[in-house]
Length: 345
Image (cartoon, rainbow, N blue to C red; front, side, top):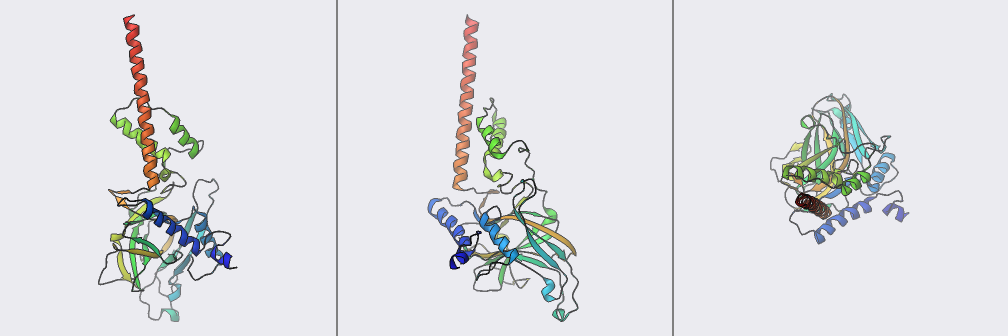
């Protein structure tokens, strides 16, 4: 029974969550000496353990000292909002990754029950991730939160519960759904070509002689077909979803839903205990929020810094591109020499 509690047979669990995060952070600390390290995955529903944690939260089969996925709304103060969460792990065609769907209805109507005696405003719903045992010690090595999600036109607050001396403190950032562009559809994939087939085809193709602009376009296409971050299923973001980057320095310090008069920037030693989302935009109506993954990242010159594996892959692609260009130049030289010989004869 103790083993099942620590390492559930279906996957997931607080101890696995602790080990997965620590393994990545300590591996980067040991191997990655760059001033800006690669991403650390906090939650990703394409991983078996995170799916298992969500399933257990939905069925309420697993309980422990660390919280699981949970939702709340203003019904606790007599309001009429309601929300629910569900796991979508099969779109029928196998093209969409598993994701958490949080949906419901927000009502700003104030209830009439005894719970709403001193309530002056209402209309909110929230969802909270499982707790990270002993927190996620990001320190000063990461500067932003990456969210791969699909949102509607509503405004959502992103809640960071961090290790602090003041239990009521919570840092909040905001997602303005009305200002987000539609998700990009990657057109280099189709029904007849799987990822492996398209990647293999890219490696075998020999480019024609190119000028600088054509070379850059070809290189960009080569990266698209070789970089897992652009994979339609495993990418960040996958097809049909949007990548949102929220710098830690833009989060505001709040307490009990109100801004603190004395603000403390979230740019020091950060230890994340849990992450949540809240909708409280004062608009009545339905909402839907689909979440695929959360990562702590570094952003440099507007781009997410990749892992060491990404750099090795980029170097390999450039070497392959250079070799292909050299081979093409040799072929042109041979053809030119042949023509000269024919003219002389």
